[in-house]
Length: 332
Ligand SMILES: Cc1cc2nc3c(=O)[nH]c(=O)nc-3n(C[C@H](O)[C@H](O)[C@H](O)COP(=O)(O)OP(=O)(O)OC[C@H]3O[C@@H](n4cnc5c(N)ncnc54)[C@H](O)[C@@H]3O)c2cc1C
Image (cartoon, rainbow, N blue to C red; front, side, top):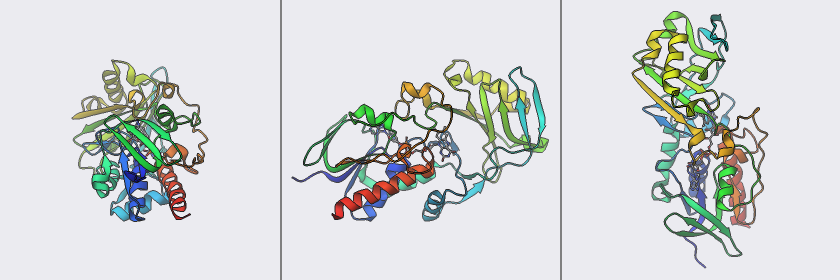
């Protein structure tokens, strides 16, 4: 029986995109189905600002090799200056001389430059706005039902969080999706004015609604930006934006309360990333592990990574493992 594709990958986040590019280079026919109208998944950059992941670490050798292949440069997270600390009662200290994210690396223009570049290599093999509704494995292949049609493939890769794979009728352990309960806010300014005050842009607040803030300015500091993670659930409050602006003003001065632009992404209410279970805050980083493939189903999202699970590096590690499994199957 002839199938539409040797491999059908569900999810065009970093894992699905990286795997699809590798398989095509290895000579396989691949179809990638993505629910959203854009590639990248949790990688999301708006006007060049990251509303999903921002950071790569120097030990993320797969990410660094990918940047090299795509000819994208990384630059260091700004980490010079003092941190602002706000306690639960609102008392503020500005004398703490340490940086929380020193050593991390960022990409000018946002990490979506990575996923957009990979998506560009896939051309017509990537189908956007194509949510998968169900996956059925049988003795001769797999049937993938989308909102529009049905696809047959020899093998299917679930390049998405296990909690989302469970919705497709696949039996998979319940493991939380890393950062799915989070919300991120980016405020932009004419310049990084806090640096002239000896502040790094880092802040920790027990009062909120932002829990942790960092400098998100571009490498040339031609404009300024701060980003903050909301306390769990805080972004679902209708007054979140105003409260966050008031907080930026308290911590960094009144200029911070009047940004040129404000971007907010609440991942906890995005059904293409989070389930209601992801709204329960995590006590720590879950112990992710590789999920063994079935005869025709392979898992490849970052939450199925053998190492660095939950992170960008984990998405590439999971794609690498899935690639070996699929190429091995094809050769035996
Ligand atoms: C706010 C935030 C900050 C983060 N910060 C960092 C950081 O600084 N550094 C770091 O390393 N990591 C960070 N992460 C984690 C990082 O974003 C993820 O590890 C990585 O993007 C996961 O990639 P993935 O391809 O495994 O999954 P995803 O990006 O979740 O991709 C899964 C894809 O599947 C699609 N999909 C879902 N359901 C269906 C369906 N039914 N049919 C078709 N498609 C479907 C989704 O739309 C999505 O595109 C952060 C995440 C968030 C949310």
